[in-house]
Image (cartoon, rainbow, N blue to C red):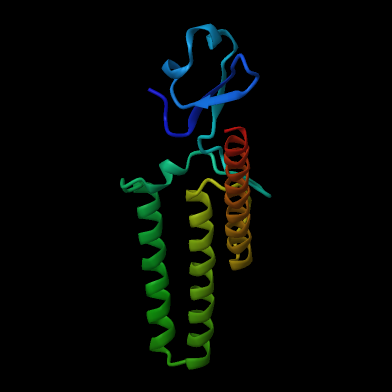
Length: 158
């Protein structure tokens, strides 16, 4: 059975292009000239690459090595913070806090981009994440315009 984004077209005896959703709806004399139209979702092409498999991003399993690395990093950062606060150097504590927060934020944005399978090396910045979102929205808008154009053509032929 065809999906809701799959259509078949043929030209009838009067020269009118007919589009149907099921191959069974094409009369037998026209089946040799049938063209398949597939409007299913293509890969979203971004300016820096493409999303390979968006369904795989939402996995629920825990990645052991990442968890151990993250837990170890937090333990070291916690011990460093305790050392800094114990000596009561407020300015140094502030600087360390800001650096840690900035590093964690950039690391988190990089992690999000990698989970979405977006190409790019190095740390992701807020600008990079916004550019990715704008490119994805532009690709979706373009796909929507193309679907509207095809539907307008179908309406004109009726």
